[in-house]
Length: 96
Image (cartoon, rainbow, N blue to C red):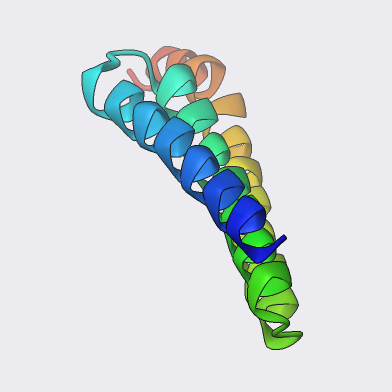
């Protein structure tokens, strides 16, 4: 069973590597952010699978930390993107 879980973790890491390739090739910020979200989710899934394969309960904490970092980065990106176009045009109109 440990071999199957390790193989599944390697598969998840391979798919996540394809997401990293998308991060490097993309020109749109939204696509890059979604790829970063995929990286966080894929890394957490791989850590959970490897933790189950090695019977290590500490891996769950690492996976939760990765998921939190991915969620916080997505939230920070959303907050940064929500006010930029309209705020910039309003500030330009206010200046003489």
